[in-house]
Length: 271
Image 1: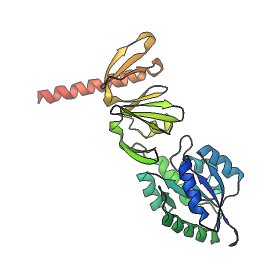
Image 2 (image 1 turned 90 degrees about the horizontal axis):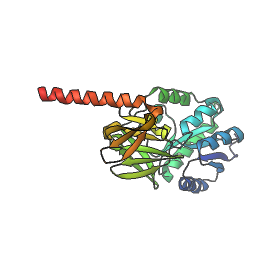
Image 3 (image 1 turned 120 degrees about the horizontal axis):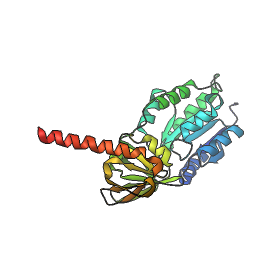
Image 4 (image 1 turned 60 degrees about the vertical axis):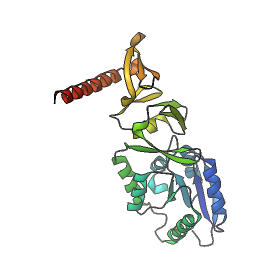
């Protein structure tokens, strides 16, 4: 890249207001030109394969294909410079710092972005620019190897990041590329897929009872057999869900959990 050439930037974020803010901040930089915007990971993969880009500002938490999966699908050898953007991901932030990778925390501050752009300018002038960034390879390997189960999850709701303890979630229901998270009698609509959220929930505590519903086992009060192998799952708050016969293995899991709880109570009484 010649020093006189503009820095070609791609913005990837599933939230339009976040892209608008980014675009506004980058317009203040005379040597930066935004060559494209993507509202999701799949669109980002297609754009990166088609367009010549110097740097991509890549949101991590996106429904469907997330930021890390974009990097994995494109391949480190084909990636431009990457600046990861996250609303809240404690493990990822620590990983970025360990591997000395660029990241921005939402909402993006103007002075922090200017600092990052100075780093980008320096990187683009390096003789080794264009070679695969092994730090991203190491990061992706580390993220794949690390347990993904979290005690708290961060959700983007109404432009804010809400942290919710997984123990407080009673059940989750898929709604297209959204999930309704039911907790304490309230439903929160989250732009994420059920499979992606399920992967981050403690497997010992949460169980999928149908194609579209995941339930917190601690919230279950009882099971009632229905016709054709289905079961009614009654929660402690009175919610009634259906456990489909295609998830019959869940019945054994629930029964085993109940037996362990009963034994624990009995042993406690005998002490």
